[in-house]
Length: 470
Image (cartoon, rainbow, N blue to C red):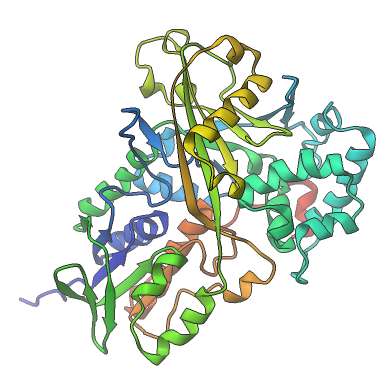
C-alpha cells in the first residue's frame, strides 16, 4: 500500500490578523500549521483582554471595517464569525453644540449616492462644499501619483477651505489612515476616497458585536480543527534558513519546519533577522518606517448618555465615539440599556499629542469634550475609566513609503513575509493585514507545488457611473 506524502509543515510567527489569515488559508490547503504568538491571546493589535484596573474586557482599540474590505469579510466568513459583525449604512457627524448631521446613501448612482445628504450638512457652508466637490472629482475618478507631496499640500493646491479641511478631510482620513494630513501620501488618501465611493455598499461600516479576541479565537479553533497547533507565550526569536528546511529558535528550544511565514509588525521583525548579507536589504527597508499611535479612552457612566451606537466628533481632540454597551449585547445580558448605563470608547487616531500625558490627564481632557457633544452626559457620573495607548498601532503612511514596503517573497525561498506594512496595495488596515496573509499563503503554496494557490478574493466591483472609470 502506497503511503501518502507527509504534510508540509509551516511555522507562522505572529498571531495577529496577517498570521491568522495565512494560517487559516494554509491549514485549509493541507499544510500542517504551527502558529507561535508571544502573548497569551490572538489578534495582535486587534485584541482584547481583562483590564486589571477595571475588571472589564476591553479592546486595545476599536476596529471597524467596510464592505469594500472584501478579503476581511471573506476571512470572517471563513472562520464563521460573519454574523458577529453589525453593519451600518449611516454615519453621524456631531458638532460640539450637539447638532448632528447624518450621511447616508440615496437612490443616485455611485459616486453621487451620498451627495444629497452631503449637501444638507449644516456644519459646512456652500463655499466648503463647493471646494470639497472640486477635490472629490480627481480623487474619485483618476489615479493620483506619489510626487512626494503630502495630502495637506495637495488640499491646499486644490483650493480647500480651512473648514473643509478641519471638518471633512481630517475626520475621514485621520481615522482611516491614523496619521495627520501633512504626513499622509496622496495615493493613500485618494485610495480611501475612491474605494469608499465605488458603490453604495462600499461605505457600509461593520462593527464587531463581541470583544476582538473572542472574534479571533474562532480563527484559532479553525486552525486546530484542521490539524494545526497554536503555541502561546512563544515568541520566535531567530530563524536559520537552510536548503531543505527553516530552523526556528524559540526561548528554550529550536524546531525545524519546511516553511516559515513571518507575520510580524515592521518594528518586531528587524531584531530576529539572521546576521547574514541577505538581511541587509530588508534591514534598510525597515529603517524607513515610523509608527503612528492610536489612543482608546474607555469610560463607564451610570446612565445612558446617547441613543447612538457610534458617531464622528468634530473640532475636538476626541474623534469617534463607539457606544460599546449598545454595540456588544453580551455586556448587558437581559438588563436593559437604561439600567446598565453607558460604556463608551473614544478613539483618537494619530494621537501623538497624548503619548506623554498621564491616563488621568487624558480622561480629564476627554470627559468635558464628550459632554459638549452629548447633553445627557452632563448629568451622568463617571464610574470608572481607563486609557489604552497603542503607540505602535500602524505604520505612518508618509509620502514615498511604498518604495520600502516589502514583497512577500524574501531572499530565502522557504521564508515569506506578511503584515499590513508589506506590499499589499492597501494601507495599514485590517483588510491590508488579511491581504498580506493571503498573499504570503499563495506564494508559499506555489513554492510547495500546491494548486490551486489562490486565496485573495476580488475587489468589490464598481457600480453606477463608477463603472466608467475602472
